[in-house]
Image 1 (tube, one colour):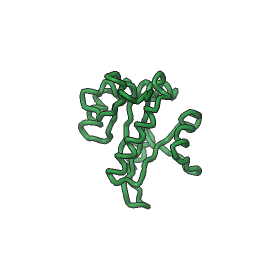
Image 2 (image 1 turned 135 degrees about the vertical axis):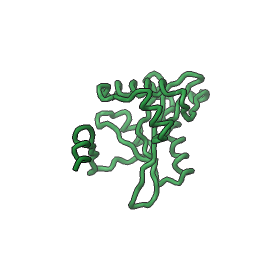
Image 3 (image 1 turned 120 degrees about the horizontal axis):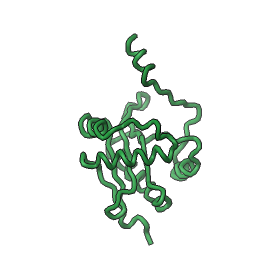
Image 4 (image 1 turned 90 degrees about the vertical axis):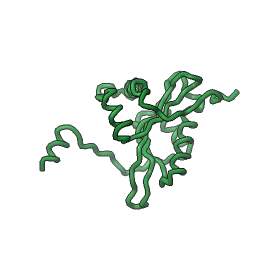
Length: 162
């Protein structure tokens, strides 16, 4: 039997802000990064539905929310086109292994094609072997030699003053 039979994806609405925040917190707990979550419902409401800085898909099994994907668009100067950047994809642990993550990524890939993106990219924690194996099984490639840098907090403000 197809486990994805009553699985659906829908674009998040403003009324979903508390759900989105709770799913973000679940993901952070799984990634052992809960202490880094400073998002609030107000911040998410403004960022997602005011400024429209990112878009969110809600994954549902029947009527039960089981995950989400949050993405936005970046830009490749070398290619001259936007790319779809997947910030988060999360399926609750009890629903994993049923194809829901793959269906979600396929939906995002279709969206990237329709919106004429050069492709999709995301990051994955180096210890997350199940996700790494899954991503590689669908043809995703790890770009060796690239490092992610972040400038935030006091360092960001200090640089901005110069």
